[in-house]
Image 1 (cartoon, one colour):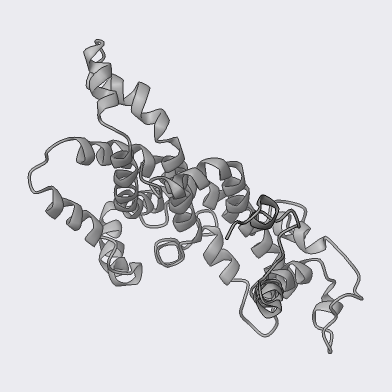
Image 2 (image 1 turned 180 degrees about the vertical axis):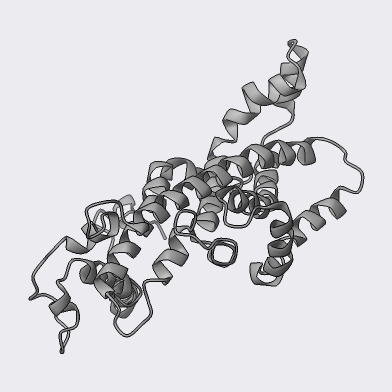
Length: 303
């Protein structure tokens, strides 16, 4: 039986034969997912929002019962108390924040400077018992700091490093170098060694080839590794409280913890100090966000 072209190819628009339940189920599922994620985000962010809100409340509103969520007087006195004492000079908290900036910044730079070349060497050269060495390096991070703080305290007492910023810088660097080596080795493995071989054929030494060609390609990985190393040094509490005793050397985590105690606690000051303490890492992560995203996703897609 002959079939005409008009019958074989219909000119009418194609009808959606998808069942109504399936058509509208996807949209309903998306709305449900968004609602669930919104609720989870609100629950997870509530402590942060409450901390920020407490930092800008007056003391009478901080201790109000029932708690005031919206109808309160905004003040910045708590942030002023973080940086300035009642006498007009610098507060002990501001000194602790500056100590954290110095200790965390220097230890992160040292860990990066030492860890990146070491990771490159482990990736490029045939080192004897390489896997055993890498496992030994990683094993230094197996134990929590509280387990080794007593031996380190005794060693530091003999060396005269107790209650010094140099002592904190050295111990933070020692803990960050293994992490940096393991992180950066994965990034170096993703950069083809042929780039360096081609550069050496053009007359560059191996170190020059690494510095001119490989190192620029590692910037995303270095940024990602530096962020994690900075977070460890910035948030570290155990070594900071055991190895320091004076306000001129103590970093921010034990200084903020020292605000909680006694019969009354100035929760507005605690909240303001916590907000100020969280800002530097957030700002640093924001500034290197492009490199951070590229470094975290490096090697995720194989060509």
